[in-house]
Amino acid sequence: MNEPLWWLTKDGDKDCLAMYERHYSRRTYADGRRQTQFVGPGEKVVLRTERADAVFVWRKFIDDSGQTGINCAVFRNESSHRSSHLIRQADSIADCLWPDCRHYTYINAERVASSNPGFCFLKAGWRRCGRTKGGLLIMERTQKSRIAQLEEALRKVRRLGQHEPARRIINEALGDTWEEETGFNKGSTELENGK
Image (tube, rainbow, N blue to C red; front, side):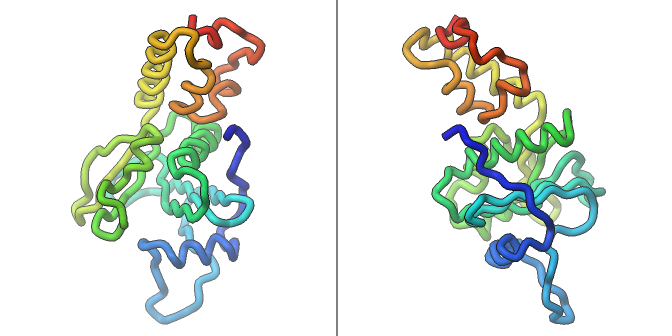
């Protein structure tokens, strides 16, 4: 599936707010006020799928924990799309907006249903890099890890030779926008043939 899945929206999008309210990290006002926004201060990009069955929020702010880069503040997927695919596409969007910035997120391993917390981020090329003082799992995707993904994809292409199109292998590793980002000529057969 190569088509873009994310639509740009705004903090306060009612469908996204409803998804956020079903997310384990949801916060409420102590005085009981109804929320109309959910992202918080700082630079932010709110993404949603066309059907509003997935939401992803990037946020750049001064993080009290000392983490730096672009924070995945919210990710919830209730769609039929693979979470790792959605994450890779969101990564590509963030790469365009904030080039050379580290991507990071926090996961409360006790509050997610998975027996392997953060697995979808791992499949999207992220790595576990520590824990907060409060015990949250910290995951990141750096430019260095993105380059490592590309190198591994190219090794796989070389191993397989002509048995599998290179574009598909690299799309799995980097997401669907790598051709535009790298300036790859779509008419080229050299990479297609695994050379």
